[in-house]
Length: 219
Image (cartoon, rainbow, N blue to C red; front, top):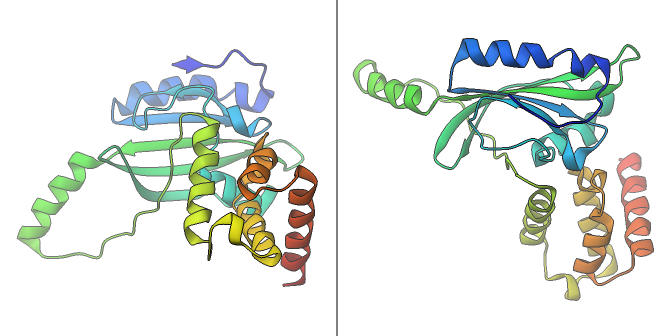
């Protein structure tokens, strides 16, 4: 098992032996990942097995950032999602870990490579008939924090009505609001990156962020 040499909360430290045991029991098609939410940009502190190819020191996924930004400490677990990574079909679950006061301090990720099982299921389906399928969730298993930021920024730019240099002030506010809702600004350095993309100052990005949150609160 690969571990990041960093002092962790006791609740997270106690899970490391479980990762080793589960990985040994479930075999090579299973990957277990432990995240420490105190540092989103380097949250992955332990990994056992290999399915997504991520290493310790990797950031939170875009899916986790958005989910945690939306729900905070009340975030429900993300169970039995399906996604793809480099041709592999992956079944993934995330269990949020809390301290005694109920604050989310980390998460346990369970990733199963079900590619071959899915192929077998398709063969069986041809024999027994079609069954209802489960939709896939797009999750970017980034290896470093810059990949997460670039993915979120490029996705937002593709959905924007026009390039940043042609956006009106209100369009820029909505652009920043969208990125804020996805949890981008939980990552260190994200404000500076967005400011550069929009051609504005860091102070202006914070102003846009405040306006967007007020709109969000107003419903």
